[in-house]
Length: 151
Image (cartoon, rainbow, N blue to C red; front, side, top):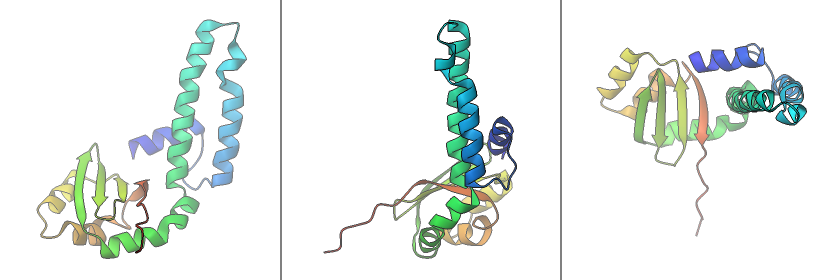
């Protein structure tokens, strides 16, 4: 959640920002701090280059958790949750990353350590994610499954 809040603060947007709002804010910020605007001031160019990279990262991240984006992937997400087991998962700084058998990877943000410990000790990781993680935490897809050839 810390990363989400930092990115929202950087772009000065709220939790309900739409894709259109994110895009407008992003474009305006990039016009303002684009390194090419500072070709005669090397120090400012380097500073603004770093800032523009942060803005780009924040924009792409916030787009990935925007309600419209999640709505687009919702059907695949539901299929993955309902029919796939978990291959692997990691936990770091309240971010749970889950790798499913269909090659989908999802990150869940703000997952408390005690919930992670309960997942580790559960009989079925996939069932635990369906019951206690999905729908309770902000998530995003970090790797989409690739369609398999039918033949």
